Every structure is written in structure tokens, then in C-alpha cells.
Image (cartoon, rainbow, N blue to C red; front, side):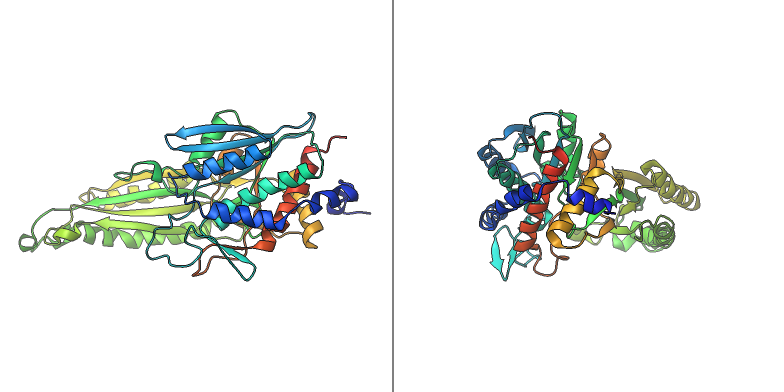
Length: 424
């Protein structure tokens, strides 16, 4: 008796599979990948990348929509309209890059918006997260078209702005800080609602069924502001010293949370994301405030308000113990985790076609990073993360094997045909 995976692999006629795979062109994939790497597109500066994607999708003859999310930033949505009667599948990918390319301390080839091909790898900012996926989506549709295939359902390619994990806070205002699902929120708020979605985040071709959420927390304490010469006898009222006192119970809470909220074999990591206080240009004054910023990872099984109550309980205990510290508490990011059933037809189709191309089924994984699946699943769009990358970043930064881009383009094309249905 055939396994479910084998049954799914038989759903497309072998001759049809050969036709589709024959139209995947490595040279064209590499050429587009080089193009998109060479377009700088940090968060808030995605316009030129959006214009490029608009032209690329128009060249495929798709119905292309330009969604201006704010001045100088847009989502680009291309819809390959089917004949009717099939499911609609979206490929979603963000255009903004993890870094700007202008960071002096990031010197590797893969941290710059300049494409380099070396020993079968493509290096360059964004190829990993996640312009490589946008390239694969585009060439998957191109392969289906060149094979002379019409699908019943629609295939949507959405290139979105503002996904990278960053947010506005305090004096940090403006486009460059509007990330964390900014573009995809606009996308689904304005009518783009497919039946299901593949996010080509850099998963090393693993199928990510679940990912953690993220909650950012600020804890602050106040202190006196006086000249160094006049603080004798009041040293413990220095806000940095007070924050030092708070750190021990905060670190104890972190250790407890990381253990009790662990999920899927992953620790619910809490990052000490930032600390600040005082004035470097005037060290002769005691700092009037010190602030600690935390990134708390929350498993998909715990609601964000429950996680907030947990750390707020710590804050309330600290406030009671130190009533003169002028403590402040704030949560300023709340991105829930996401999950999809392992038996969803999209999962079965991806795994079957991965096995067809790679010779073995893909690994499944739970990850602690976030994605726009957080937004999409809350609009009823079942979403899985499955995308091209080739191992973790090293000192050279972002890189992907060219063969990985080719293989996953083939898998995306076959999966779209499988899920949307081939019209007779």
C-alpha cells in the first residue's frame, strides 16, 4: 500500500512533471538573484525593489497591483488568475533586508548589496532573507507558464515591505523603524486573502510548522541627577546602580521563563536586547534614568497577554520591594507565534514534491524566530515557512547555494500545480 507521501507524488502525471521541470532555467534564476541583491532595500527604503518586482511580475503577464503602504513604500501583488474551481495559493516574501549594507562592523560579502558568485554560492545582502525566495516564486510561475499549463486556482506572488523585526519606539520614529509585519498587515487588510500561503523564509528547506512569537519589554528605573562632586552619600540613588540591583531578579525570571515556556525542543529564549542610561558626553552627572529592553520569545501555545502577565507579575514584585526606584514597565511589541497542522494539504504537497526533487522528505522544525505567518494565520490564511537557504550565516553573511535556488523553484512550481489544480 502506498504511503500518503507517495500518493501525493503520483497526483501530477509524470509527463506533466517533466514538462514543468524542464522549464526551470538556472541562468535566469541567477541573473534575477544578482539583480535583486544589487538593489539596496533596507526597511523603509524598499521603493526601487518594489519597482523591480512590479516589472518582473508584469513581464509574466500577471494582474499586478501596487499597494502604497506609505509614501515611498509599497507592496507589489501579482495574481496569475486561474480558470476557476481551484484553491488560491499565495507566495509571500518581504523586500526589506535584515541590515542596511552600510554597517561598518559587518564586512563580509553577504552583508553588502553587491552580488558575488563564488564556488556555487550566491553572496549578497538579502539573498538569504529573503530575496532568494522572491526569485524562486517568480521563476516557478514562469516555468508553469512555459510548460503551457493553466491552473484552476489563482497563484499570487506578494512582495511586501516592512517585515524585519524592528519597531518604532521613543525617539526612533520613521519608515526605517516600521517593520514586524507592516506590509503584510496592509496586504490582508486590503483584500488579498488566499486560501493558503507559502513563506519562503530561510529555513534550509526544512518545513517549519510552528514558530515562536516575540514580546518586547521595557523596564526602567529613575535616579537622582546631580554633579559627581555632590553625589557622595547618595551613590545608591544612581539609576544605573539601581538597575544593577534589579538585574538579579530579572535574570532569575528569565531562567524560569526559558525553562517553563520551552516548546518543540526549543528554549523560550529571552534576549537582553538593550540597556541605556546617562550621558556619555557628560559623565560628570548621575543618570536620571536607566532602561533595560528585553525580547521575550513566546511559544505558539501561550497567548501574548498571558506572557505579558507573567513578566508584569515580576515587575509588580520589584515595584513593591523598591517603591522609591520610580519603576516603569512597558510592552511595545507583541507578535504572536504561528502554527499549521502537519496534515494540511499544503504540507503534504510540499513534502511530496521535496522528496520528488531531493530524493528524501524534508525535515520538520519548530523555530524561535518570527515571520509574517503571525499576521496571515490570524486572518485565516493557513501559512507554512519553507524556503531556500544553505546553512547558518557565518562571517561572510548571507549566501545561498545556486542549486538550492534551482531545486526549490522546482518544488514551488510542482506544489502550486498540485494545490491549485491543473485545468484540463
